[in-house]
Length: 165
Image (cartoon, rainbow, N blue to C red; front, side, top):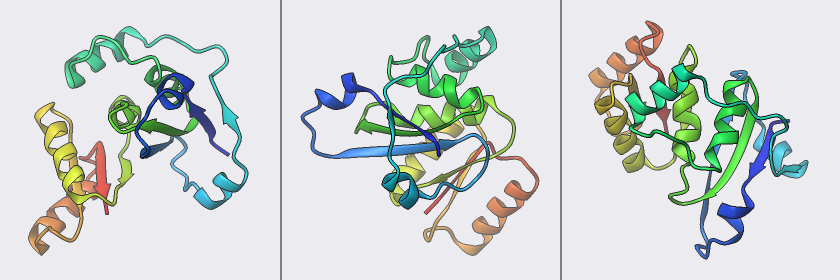
């Protein structure tokens, strides 16, 4: 089961009733959310966290424009970069996207992002592309020729992130 990371600082003091989540699975396996929620175990931190390497710090600055991570992001990203799984619950605007986008760029392969929000999906892909990150999305708004192009990019290993609805 993935480690569940919840920041009391970010969650406990937020007055917003709506929370979003991100799941980063470094082992490329499918997470059974039903089983995860039934067997929910909350870990409020990670033992022996490691600092981002100079390569990762440069990647953070060059691709995302940040010199540091938020306190709640750092242990999640370090955990996923180290090969761990994470289920992240943060308030809207808390920085969840970076928790899966950064490891997706730092690690080899293509990260699959499942999102029911088509408008957010397009905004995130557009922003990632502007940062030089190879990203695409597949949803019901794409014409067939664009959908084929995205599948070709995926099969060729050209994408770092793919968003699907």
